[in-house]
Amino acid sequence: MSAGWGEADWPQVVGHELVGKAVRVGSEVKHVKVGDMVGVGAQCDSCGKCPEACGKNREQYCTEMVGTYNGKFNKGEAKGDKSYGGYANYNRSPGKFVFKIPDGLDPALAAPMLCELAHKDFHALFEALGIHAPIAE
Image (cartoon, rainbow, N blue to C red):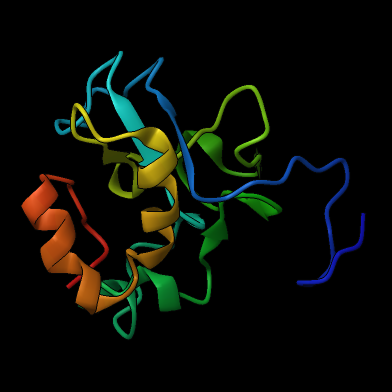
């Protein structure tokens, strides 16, 4: 396997735009419950405080963004832990980066749409589908 997007932190489990069932949910997360079908895009965390990106609800531009895989969490309980992608047995992501997939939406169709969450054009589509989209304006 090559590391075409930069230095890889081995061992590695790849995969982004992932969909699965929530098996554990933090006490502060209100939009998802255990058993819900959920998705995570290509990003699973950010610093949450920089004014130029996170302060404008544009976490995808955060210089401390954590990719869904090949990243390291930089805050909270997960600080220092690696992010493992969609081919891992489990994925750990803060609630802000987890999207509830509406009942009846085929997960195979939902997964590629997660790639587009950073684009403003798709915000209306996700709102219409009832998908919580916190990183889109």
